[in-house]
Image 1 (cartoon, rainbow, N blue to C red):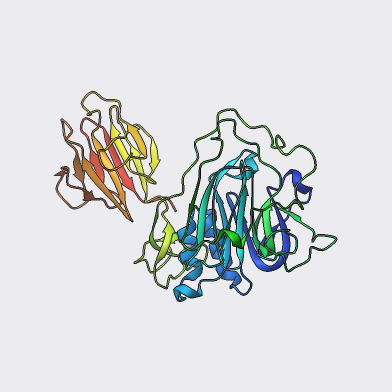
Image 2 (cartoon, helix red, strand yellow; image 1 turned 30 degrees about the vertical axis):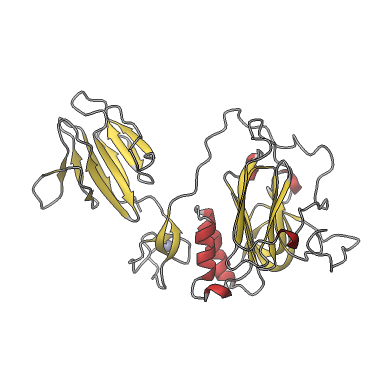
Length: 381
Ligand SMILES: [Zn+2]
């Protein structure tokens, strides 16, 4: 178990926790609540998974690993595009299974109840200024628990920075600042089969609502909002006990060396290595990458490439070379460059790349001529 409770109240801790029998997870971009009885070690692995960029599917797969599909433990999950600690509204992905509810407040209150879901129910809420995960019947809430009388004195809500701890309810600590550019009414998409909206009315609880105006309590932040970093691609793989994602055929964790076991689950893919460019630039390979004199990200039918690397030399084509990440492989493709790309691999003669993807191994050098080159290497330990 780990928990980090702030000591100076709501001012600095982004979340509040009401202690309880379940297991609460809080990380910079989200909250989850697991039903009592889930192995705390599993909860810690899930916490690592989410802190490293896991999504709803990888969360549920890992929570249910080794169990029949209908024995997936109950949970509620709220996964935001940005850390609420930044103080501004976030887009949030809600999911719930069993006797759990995830909710968010945007232009209106939205919630997802797990009751009746074959797997789980989910929905996305844009520009949320608050989000909550809780058990149905949580006596500190005035919804979903009609059979449980609300206590005269609600359970104490403790400030929480992040971690794994016993809980029945977790939520953002204050109200986030609404985005002036947010669509009104918010774009909201409900998904999930069998969701019964009558199971849980829109949350109207006021228990933890701070006094004073609802909006404008967030800390100031730069006017230029950085683009939301999307979740990382999710691929089949193995997680070690510390939450490091590994190839599905790995025997030991590539980062910490512990033995790996079990069937692969969906894991957030880490960087697959680095490109060391002859300009001195070093690029982590987390996305497809286009290399050229004036690279562009378009590739018909394949979506935008994630990253551009500029090699400012006249003999380099504008779009010269592309690195494509496919599951755990790095593939190199020459983009019909004028002067070609040569693959130099230790122990092999140089090979001219074509438009047929060629899988790289660490140490490979891609030569674009006249001293322009990129080297593929493993991530530094
Ligand atoms: Zn590891």
